Length: 616
Image (cartoon, rainbow, N blue to C red; front, side, top):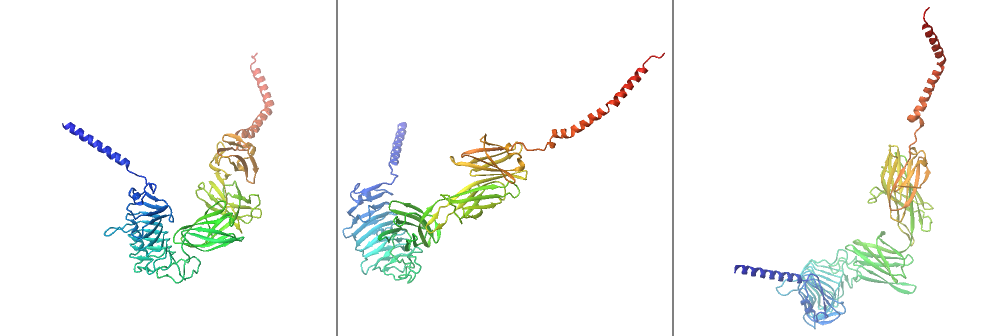
């Protein structure tokens, strides 16, 4: 019985766990888009079937509903002008009761209130809602009833409302919106809270505002709002009013022109009117086109780092561009199609003078060669080069900047600068502080004459130097990267590795002190172990060896041959020089002594024979 009960419990737990696993598996994790009326005929039905993070997309049309957004979703129309929710003359069209909900691209009309973030009596108001690109019109009460905090109203149009925006909360932002045609005697803005920020808005009369007892910020630190009828002056041409401020007692940076991200400037060329447009979150003012100079001039102001995108017909500008901010060249991105050129750049906070200039680009070539002295103490490096146009014509009076690196190009230090002569040539002398491996770089940053600009040109070559016996030095210059430079004094072999991009031609120039090589014909050069040809030049204190190869990575070995040694310094030479004369003297002495010795021996022989005769 107990066993059956245990088995039953285990089976029940297994079924429960399977059901739980199945439930987890079916939980939706990816946001989805629900389309009205394709998926649901009513907007509220779609909201009811949405989950947090989903988007309820409303296709173009007019919908007669009052909806409640009670989930953290995005309620988005196809476009502000074509997607309309009509309240039928009364009630609140959109009530946002959830936090961080988004409502955008809708026209909300004919209602008591257009949109509210107020939960209701005794309820906690929502926060963090985003209300964007809405048109709210014909409300008999409040166009936007903003209750709670951290809401953002942006790019909205409010027209023909009894009270345009009612703010009952703190830390909200109202920007980029237009308020007009508020019912006479009523309020454009009414505040029941402080620490709200209001900027980049356009206010048209009547625009009475209530709630000045609360401290709110009517600008972003550099730009305020446009007030129709403001009569102050812009003394510096930055688009911000400088007199009669703070306007209406609140706005210290009133805008001279209505706020819009997209600005259109009309210019005439050969009787035809063309439009130049700018798109930016910053204030653009004092726009001017200088056709003879082919340059746009304008001022830009922002409280933070911003951007600007300019669209220019190619009938006006059809070349490459240069962007200068406050007279300093700035980086930018440009593109071009069949009809227009597009230029995009960033700018720092504050007010700036901008020039966008059309320029004709000419390419240039820059070459350098390096020759190093073979003396170790205070060895000198000669850097010669030439700057030309692509057709070979020298560019004169141009500044060439020279740098060196001992970190394979990770960082660079100044050598000096040079100015080209009439034919584009330049030459400088450099004394490195120590032997080692150097990358040497020449840079021509380009210059500008009227509307002609020469592109920046950079070329890099390499120098490696190696001491030997504290008196001589090997130096290697190359367009390849030189590494592993070493000299074996026993085998008298100089070796190093060169590396470069595949398919390109590489070269090396090797300076070898003349004191190390008596006969250059004895020198052998090997490329990856195979003997290869080279050319030589005799210099004042060194031999110059030159060889070329196709790039990849190669090992180059240079055998200097046997060192020249005077004959009398060898052991064999010493024997010949000192041993032969001594031997000759000994032989001659023996020859001269030969006859006296012979007579002496003969006399001794006679004497001995007489002595040995028997006595009589």
